[in-house]
Length: 243
Image (tube, rainbow, N blue to C red; front, side):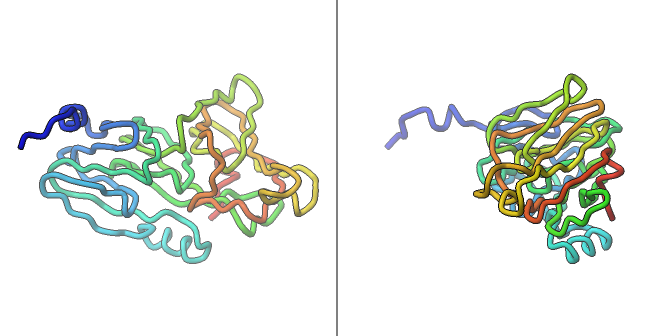
């Protein structure tokens, strides 16, 4: 008996041949013929061809040590072979961009995939003059290649050079290399430092030249716990990234 309806015609695989292409706003298609890629562990939903996966954990001894000491990080798998790979993360929206000899700092839970030509490392956002026991952990991506991140809903790209810019740390997805960032906590006592207290007092303040990507959701995700928040002074990517 024939199947009637538009299911198979409306949702056919895209024929585009770019290395990273959106199959739809929640599903990323990767052409493996351009070389190996890194993808978030468990993000594979389908592939066609001959694709192999090797779980690298946090990848590299230095990153493994950081992950073990902090309980933070991002688990990645190396994908190699030929064919088409489809990745997604909990039906979150997928955003794709090309990095050209530049860098971004991404919330660990928002990293979906990137070209193997991109150098990456896990960094702790260090508050100057204060200990951040809970900590905030980001992934720095540096070099040239494709990057895909996830957002909860459609994000906004804020030009920090146009005005002083502030955001809830739980809503910040990434910022670009020319941006400086401070971690700020308003007064109000310990109860105000956690959601459900007297208010949202934990903020990030951005300046410099570049963009901050903010999602319309305040979700605590892996790679960035927001407990035990502490006031910060100072800024810049170098000042925020501790060892």
